[in-house]
Length: 224
Image (tube, rainbow, N blue to C red; front, side, top):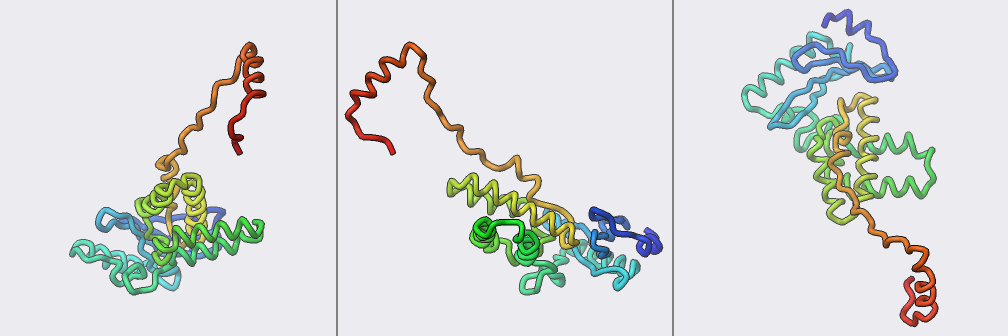
């Protein structure tokens, strides 16, 4: 990718990715930010490294950082050890911070009770698990694991809604350049379905007289 292409890149309605090859790309957000990102795999997990923004970080510098990351991978060193995703270091964008910005951007559209329920679900079931993790480094397996915990409480509908909420937060993060994908999106088909409710067969017309007679003489407890 020539440097002129980096300079000439213009924002569009959706996030653009200008590839430089071997995982390195320039992410252009609808807001006009130009962010260096690099996709790589560590211990069978997909990750995205952040190298800063263009033009503060030049194309040559981004390529150098990408080469350094590949050297670490080849040496069996976790590249996140000196990145925001390292233990004890501040992530590039913690999931909870991304969720807060998404929530603030949407809250005015919701009634107060609904907004409170949304945040309460996240606070109870999501933030303790991945709230401090870099939103760009969260995997589908991690999202599914926390959703399974909700399902195991037999809260199947809540788990379904929680996945939808998380997916909205990840999409918001992609649009703002904090992440490159939505790991909750492919999990829709993995969610457990509520058992089908069984209904009694409808009475036939010739059964109604006997049913009404039995109903009039019924002396048992009422169902509430």
